[in-house]
Image (cartoon, rainbow, N blue to C red; front, top):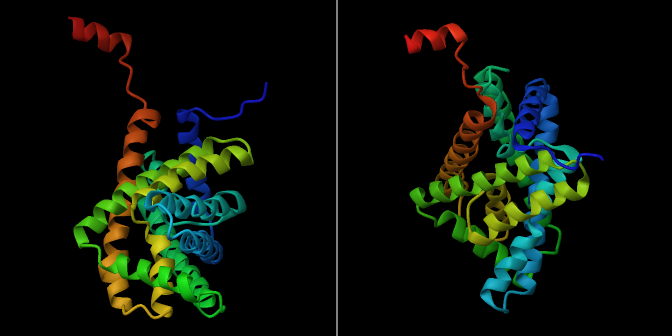
Length: 270
């Protein structure tokens, strides 16, 4: 019978192998795939805005759920179609801890992909803002989201970023364990829906939401977008996705405890 999913230990090894492959990407590949990932996440965000403003007047909880339900398509596109997403790539720390590559290789990927994600997000936001589709309630929704993003206190933005990327990398982790497209879709949908529903903060998503609102007339600046939101949220995303989850799973599933030899056992007894 065909195996339909990997065990956590097998997922850890598959994640390490994926990290090795990521360190071998050229700068051009990372830029192209990073721009795609920024746009993919933006597509999910735009879908959420569109359906969110349509059902804005119903029960608040249901309105939030409908918004959250549309957003995960962005990560599905990243995982299934192939793209480089900064927050998901935080799991590369697992391979570094295992000694498969150096931390400079991780930083090379993160820096290039993060900037490419920003470029892809902003390009899509600029195109959507000038598409003629963002009028009335849709524009108001986008503007209100952008205003809310830059109004989050610095410390709270970090905490929301931590909690967000724990769920994002777990979604990637689960999707890695799925052996077919349906499994990967469900693996992406539940954790991503959950972080959006709760109100956690995702740096790449905000690279789309905040500029879109600004392009549509929100009274915010690039400085506010970066200082008030992207910087603290990115710090939080790194803590959640590059420290908490990889270190925990490295200790649990990758690091092999040393088994004492017969000589060492006898010495201890003596």
